[in-house]
Structures are given as C-alpha cells and as structure tokens.
Length: 330
Ligand SMILES: Nc1ncnc2c1ncn2[C@@H]1O[C@H](COP(=O)(O)OP(=O)(O)OP(=O)(O)O)[C@@H](O)[C@H]1O
Ligand SMILES: [Mg+2]
Image: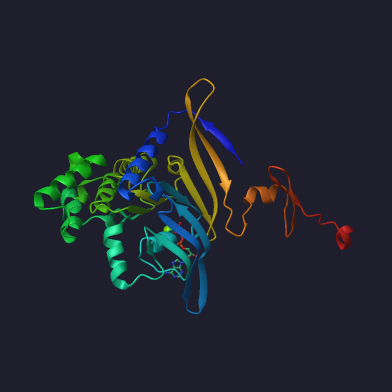
C-alpha cells in the first residue's frame, strides 16, 4: 500500500536481524526449525464480568518466527495486554490456537504452565517498580532469578553472567546501585537483563517504555535489540510509541482483538549503491480469505455495507457497491 524510503541513518537493522536469526537458528538446532516460534490462530479471549461479556480477542492470527523482534501497536483496549498475558502463560485463552515453542497454551497443566513461565519466557512490565526488587542492587536483581531456579552454575558463575548481561544492556557501570538510585530508563534496561537471566527463548515486554520520554525509551529499545541480536531471543514488545515501532523490522497492528495490518521494513540497495530502509504496509489476510480495509480507505471512498470485487491478472480491485440502485434513486 504505502511505500516510504528513508535514509540509512538508522542503526543497521538488517545486520542486527541477520545476526539474531543466525543465533536463533543455532539455539533451535538448524534453519528448518526457525518457523512459527509463536503461533496464534483464531485466538479468542472472552472476559465475563457481572454477566457482561467482553470480547478482548476475536479470532486473532499471528505467526512470529524464532529470532524475530516484533512490535505490537494498537489503540487502548484493542487487546494487546490480553494477548501478551496469554502468550506469557499468565492467562488462558477461551478458544483458538496459541502455541509457543511446542507448548499448547490452551491445554497446559498447572505444573507445565509453571515450568513454561519459569524456563521458556521472560517478561518486562510497563511499571518500572514491578520489575525489580527495591532492596537489591541491579546486580543482585539479575542474580536472583538464577538463584531461585538453581541455574547459572555456582555463585561466581551467576555473578559473572549477571555482569555480562548488565554490560550487554549498557548499565554494567551501575551494577552496585539500587533501583531508587537509577533513572527510569536504566531501571528498564536492568529489567531486560533480569528477564533474560535464565536464558528464556522468548521475551515479552508490555509497554516497557510507557513511563519514559522518547530518548530514554529509545535506549531501552536499543537494549532489546542487542539482546535479540546477541542472544537470539525472540522478542515481542507492545508499544504506544510510533517512533519506537519504527525501529524494528516488523510491526503488527491490532484492532478490536484482531491483527489488522503489518509494517515490514527491509533494506534495499538504492540506485547509487547506498542502503536504504523501505517500509511497506500490508493488510493481514486470514486463512479463510478475510481482511480488513484500513479506515482511511473506507472513508475516502465512503465504502459501506457492500463492495464490488474484480479479479485482475495480478491484483484485486475493490469498488464501492452502487448504492443508488433501485429505491435509493430519488
Ligand atoms: N480481566 C478483565 N476483565 C474484564 N475485561 C477485561 C479484562 N482485561 C481486559 N479486559 C477488556 O478487554 C479489552 C482489551 O484489553 P487490553 O488490556 O488487552 O487492552 P490493551 O490493548 O492492552 O489496552 P492499553 O493500551 O490501554 O493497555 C478491553 O476492552 C478491556 O476492558
Ligand atoms: Mg495494555
């Protein structure tokens, strides 16, 4: 639909993504196992409160490959947190398919669910205070999940890994400070290190930059990109921040509990030999062939009720249905 080219001043996304895919393939045991790390098909979540049903997810389809870094955007109430809570094992879907790394999230036993949450996924919350224990230093916060899971080897090995992770997210020099002595952005970068301490396959973050200004938010995003590229962790991050969404290769927009459209950014070699990033927006087509037209398109042509479709050799035309047929004519 829309194509916009940008100068290549942006960090080298293509190279980072390539590295992430390579690391993820190594973890997964080969390129052929790359597809479908996260698969949602017709995912439904209905909340019932005092007899009223809220359809938070209404048949959502989404496939995310191993090693991807995907941003999810959408208006308030569109179902972003509901989706992330399901994928991270905190909530159970009402119907549909939700499969993550071979785990079927609709039929997990309590024991498997706990193992899934401890070993397979990591989580970063929007509220900085929810991610870190206030009375521990940054370093101790990163060591804690390894201690609790009895992982990361002995004390010295755990400490070494915690330091490496803090270095990776750019706050290694603040290892001995407590959260109250760190800025919001620094706390969130520590939170990223805490979330990957036990080497999860997937990291979920629900508006990790929601309480931060744009520049600080960009630093947190840079930390997520580094973790994605260096550790091959698949990352799904919900964000309101469109500038930040522009820093990833793939952004999925959710509307009314469904995936509505997607923006993919790819690197292309321009006529003068320089690399440029090109963003392309796609509508999402579900298995049965349904898609949602973008609201501006619908408004521009006053589309309503019925449209006419024509199949052309390489595209499909959508025209307004003739509403002045018969009785409408006076
Ligand atoms: N526990 C719940 N009980 C009842 N309704 C809920 C519950 N959780 C979410 N909802 C409803 O489901 C819909 C989706 O909510 P959700 O929190 O997923 O939206 P969101 O996209 O994360 O919004 P925001 O951007 O404001 O965080 C909303 O209509 C919300 O009111
Ligand atoms: Mg939310």
